[in-house]
Amino acid sequence: MAAKFVPLTLNLIEEGQFLADLDAALAEAQRKLIEFVELEGAKAKKAKSVLKIAIALTAADVENAAYTIATEIKTTYPGRLNQVSLAVQEYTDDQQPALFVRASGSDEDSPRQGKLFTRHDLADDRADRPLPPGAGEA
Image (tube, rainbow, N blue to C red; front, side):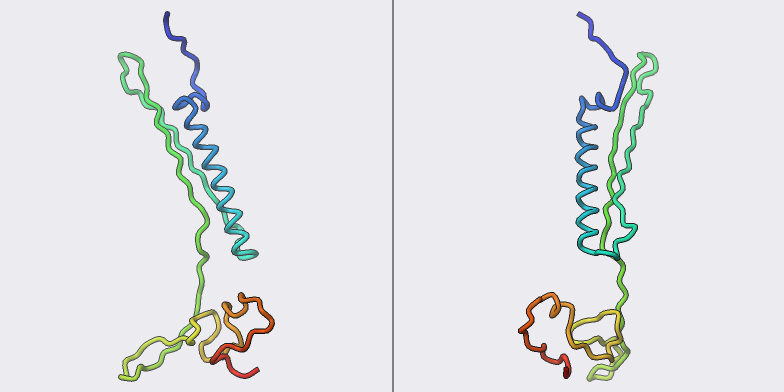
């Protein structure tokens, strides 16, 4: 009995595996975007996940009217947002120039400005915590 052929559709590429992989990639892209927005909040405005799909149909054997079907799914997810923090130029004990930041680390404020709490202190979420050492006076 001769094989029955049908016109090519997306759900027939790779016996349906291409469409299954595309569905899985779409679900992952949604999950990654939502996680990013939940993590970054309002700063995540315009964040995006991107799926790029390529299907290449190539004449492989013209004499026998045979073609290849090559597929590719590329994904791009939102990543860490660009941040800018500040440091000041000072000199080390051996008089070498270097950039200095607060002992708690750099942020968008001048290192010369003291901080009452660091972001780690605020994340602690305990009202009864003492001031961190070196935080200054309240």
